[in-house]
Image (cartoon, rainbow, N blue to C red; front, side):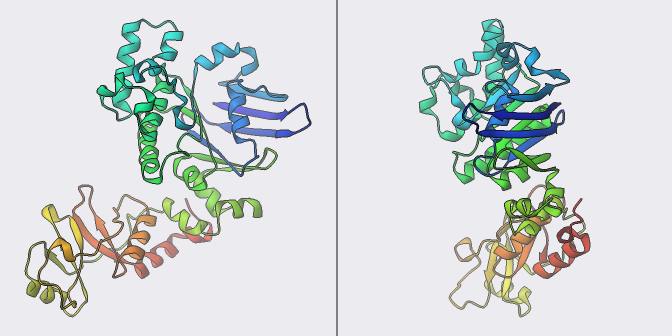
Length: 370
């Protein structure tokens, strides 16, 4: 556990970056620091490994004051990830990952084996070991940065906006990979971001900081969305916080029903027959995977093939959040979200009205999110 006990950082010119901060980052969980520019997020993070020294107060790691440990020794036991990985450009990927194990006196053989193991764990092929950072994409560099932070198997990781410089699609993939790794490893992580969506997705706990480094609220994401402490927090999490709260409502009890379906490659006559007067038919491909919606009223369509299909939008599973179902209904041409099983096979559909009723029954928009 990491504990901030009335911590303040005041610079020589009188600027207060962090003001009397008291929070706990529980062991094995991800605690996210989020807030506007100038709220002391990065300063707070860097005081944990003493790359910035606190002016007053205490920071405890597993009950031990960080001031009682030599800074160099402290940092070797804490993984640290920054934007774009912070890799050494003159070293290969393998040598970058081996940096901390080498400083800790590991043998070259053990360090190399660990580096290759971590390359695979973060989803990079072993052939990347001999490449240099400049030969990697931004997302690949970030994966190497995470691997390097994990190299000595530190119990604590500090992550300073590690995904902020990555394009949205790659960023989402890295976030998912990060959550998968955390599920396996169970590190104590303090994560800094300015993006409230990222904070809600990744955090077990989210600490919202005000400008000047004062804590506004510390809570699990669902509670933060349902019960913001004050107007500042409410404004920061956004006026669409009700929609975001749907991420924490399961779709398990959402009622689904059958839609008219036809197989890919089937006849247009069959599609119109099963439609029963409806405009849209769901076309299923191999293994009953949804291929798209077909407008059977369009006289220009000669057959049931992919070139005439409209995307089903976001699909959802019973185990997933209702937010995916609502997004699927809103992005569907017929207002129907498609439910699939774990293998991606068609299960049924749910309409926007049904989803809204389910959400209302769960109390997600009334501050009862659990």
